[in-house]
Length: 125
Image (tube, rainbow, N blue to C red; front, side):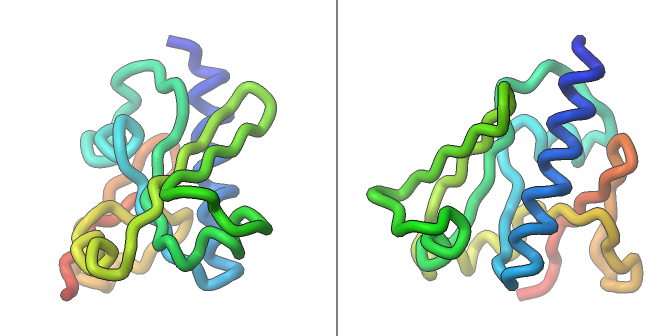
């Protein structure tokens, strides 16, 4: 496993969350990285980071309207893919992973740590 690449991907995950949080936009990590956060270890190489975001947040995230229900970003050799969901689907995502560099451990939801990054499973409505 390429630990340097994994470290760059974890840094990109943190940067993506920080950017979205500054704009008040919720994101949900999904796919292989979400599983690794749940397990608390990097289990394999990852080609990209996968996210859920609300469709209405596509323009603020990308700086332009999304042509469909997917946004793809590349930062050098690192890729991120956002699947955009409507409000009804987003309500169900409250129980999906939400990642953060500094999550409150007083929320009552389990917090998982992976290589200095934290993820939290949402337990609230």
